[in-house]
Image (cartoon, rainbow, N blue to C red):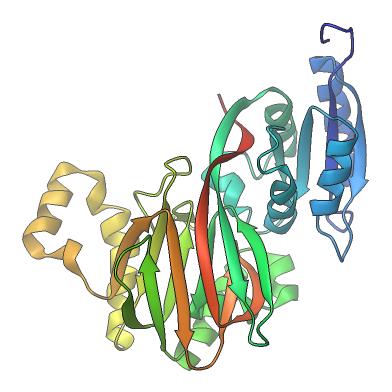
Length: 327
C-alpha cells in the first residue's frame, strides 16, 4: 500500500484471440494476492487497435503497471503509449515471435513465470526506436519499434509468411517464407545517412535498423547491440549473388555466434579478414535517414508487415520505456 493506504493496481491488456486467457486470469489473480495488488483492470485489444488506445485508457485510470499479454504487435502498440510516461510495462508473451521478450530473457514458454516477473521484476529503462515513414502517396506516419525494422527482402519475407503455418509452427514459418522470398528478391538503390554524416548511395537487398540483436533460432544478427546504449544499430545487407548470401549466413551463424565468443576466435577473424566483409555492413548512430530510389519497398517492424514506403527516418528515444525484467 502507498502512504494513503491505497493498494497498487495493474492493467492487463490482452489479445482475446490468443489461447490461454483463462489460465492468464488465474495467474494474474494469484500474483495480485501475493503482491497485495488490487484487482486488475482488464482491457481487450481489437482488430483495429492492438493496444495503444487500451494503454491510454489504463493510464487514464491511474494504474501502477501495464501488462501486455500478446505477441510483438500487442507489446509494441502498448509500448507506444507508455513511452515517456514512466509507467512500467510487464510482458506476458502469447504469440509466435515474441522477439522483444526473448531478447530481455523473459520466459516465453512459461506464462505463470512471466506473470510473476511482471509483478515483481526489476524496472529497467530501455531505448525505443521511432520511425517516421513516407508512403508512396506522400502521406507520413510515425511508428515505434522495440526490436528492429527493415526495408527490403526481410520485409518481403514477412509479407509472404503463411498465416496458417505461422499459427501452427510459430517463427519457423518465416523460414518457409524466406526460402520463397530470396530467389525472387531484387536489390534496390537507397540513399542513406547516419546522424549528420555524409550521404551514401548503396545497392542493397535490405537495411535493418535495430535496438536488439537476437532473432529466434539463436541467430545473433548484431552481437554488439544494446537496448539501453542510446544508439541505433544499422545492418546493411548487400550480397552481389547467391554466394554473397552464403557469406552473410556464415557471418551471422558462425562468426557472430561462435568465433566472436572467444579471444582466439576474434584473433582468427582479424587474421583472415572476417571482420571486413562487404556483403554485410554494420553502422551505429542516433538517427538514420533512408531514401529509396525507384519503386517503393516493403517495410516491416518487429516481424510485422507495414506496407510500402519510399523513405524512412529512424531516431532513438533513449531510456524512454520502463520494462519489468528478471532481477
